[in-house]
Image (cartoon, rainbow, N blue to C red; front, side, top):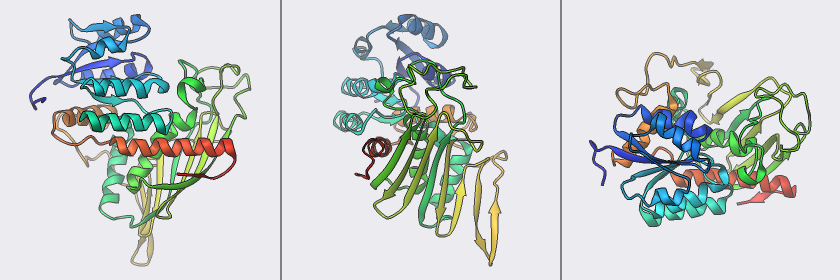
Length: 363
């Protein structure tokens, strides 16, 4: 049992982009955390991570199973390509570690279910890295939803649309390793936000489309340099129409490359019987009062829903890590429950399967 005043000992598995861009810098800022082990198949990356973020005696591994043998490690962060999320997480849970796994939960629902089951049987906590829930805008909109501002939310949009921003590094373009492109990579954030706002995790059916229209082009004006058409094996955009068991509808839109100007990242739009809201350019709420239409634009710079003293609430990744470490200490539940992330994975899989078959996918 980890006490409120104890240091939480963490092992990092996968020391690439997402570990360096989100997990390790945020964990480093928490006084009650020690990163004591680092693992990567490119051992030099693990060595560099130790130098930048680890304790002086932190261990370095090439084989993650060796890291899991260290009984002093309390928590493991899985920051590897999507295909390996499931088996590393299951092994870590069975080894007695709490696990934060980077999004998406897994490449398909069967693998995600293994993670969910392992969490239940091991009794260890599992959460998924959907840090966009912790932005000031998302927190405000969620509080309005919980207060009943929107009434019955029966239509929503999950938007993750880029014009020309295809990630050309790592294995992002490799369908085998990642399980897909923008739908599984960035729409997963938008869909998580949307279902969370709706508090609706019971899908009935969906219809999906996925396109490979621009990935064979050259001279692309891509934000991170031209992609290699031969390596671009995932979709460049994908869309889904999801019907929930209660009749609510969710539209999912995603792209890395799409000829459009109205781009969005990790955005949700919700429409209810009493009012509507979205995260477009901050928070916008609309409805009718006293026979007149109104629009509300909350000032998110003037304080608001504050989680923890001493934590910058504008840094979603930092707030996410603080909330997670507190959960490990038994001070609160994880914000992102594995059952919720499992539903996100089921819907993404349904959209992909519908796109392949050209027919409706039933859950």
